[in-house]
Length: 154
Image (cartoon, rainbow, N blue to C red; front, side, top):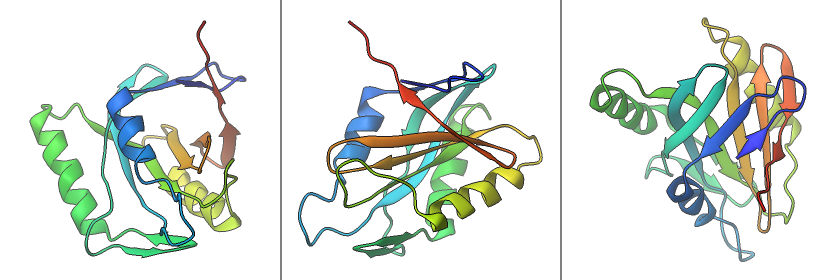
């Protein structure tokens, strides 16, 4: 789970979702970036990430880049939307970086801001980068990128 300190918004992610995303970590010098969509439920101002899409055969995966082909991922999102009676929502995206503690590139931030500002409903989107050891997570709301802090429980 992550929290955004200014608004108090929470993002929770099922263990199976984080495990699946983490399985794409770029552990060797030859592993390419991976990524996909994050799908979930909106709970007031909070987000519950319940599903993700993974790289499709038509995606382009490079050592320092991942280019998602829309149709395969969109088809999975639409299938999930129907299966949940129109409850599942596109809540963001994830991808990997070949660095221990990832930081977003200018391309990442520009793309996130474009996606967030294009939302007609003005709801924030959640973005996560999986590094070789840790994660980067943020909410994008309008033209703002709000870094999130992981919650740790005792």
